[in-house]
Each structure stands twice: as structure tokens, then as C-alpha cells.
Image (cartoon, rainbow, N blue to C red; front, side, top):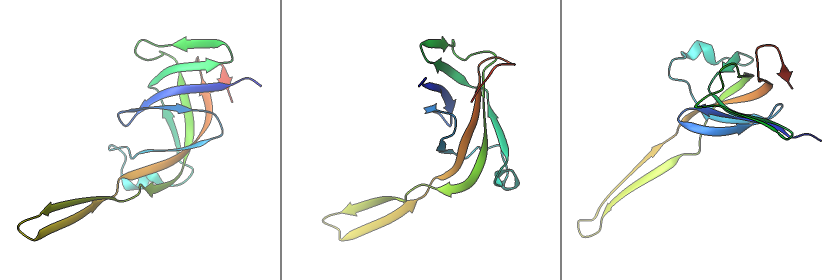
Length: 119
């Protein structure tokens, strides 16, 4: 079985993606709340690397004609991060929490050039 994957740059992080699997990424700042509906198609052009078996295509910094296509499953949240601030001698405690907005999406295909599709 050939191992096909790509490494993309999204939300300030690098993520290894494979066709048919789902991933959680940070919500796109430019998309409004109406663009986050299920089955919305998305394309990511910041592809750093594509590996198909023993062939590795490496971009500098990105591959020029590579596209990772997918669709949004649903918006979701990360686990709540809890921050506590305690002053031991003053008997003061403060607790606050934060939940990052995420998008769960599934990768449908990885296109290394404009016409060849890896799925």
C-alpha cells in the first residue's frame, strides 16, 4: 500500500494531512459565520510537501500548483484552557477560561499539479 500525504501550513501551524481523514484546524479569520456551514468546499494552496510512495515534492516555501481540497464537516471548540492566578499571601484567586474556535474538515483530494489528482 502506498502512503500518500501532504504537509500544509494553516493557522500558523504545519499539519500532515491524508485523503479521507478529518482534522481540526483554527477557524479562518476571513470567513464569516455563514461560510462555516457543513459541506462547504475549501481549498488550501499553502502546501509545503507532497509525498506519494517514494516520490517527494518539496516546495520552497510552497509548491506552486499544489492544492489540498476538502470540505467542512462542522465547526467545533477545543477543550477549555483554564488559567488561574493566585496570590498566596493576599487570599486572592482568579480563574478564567478560554475555548479556541476550530473547524473540523475532511480532506477529499491532494492535487500535486493542476490536472493530476491523488485521492
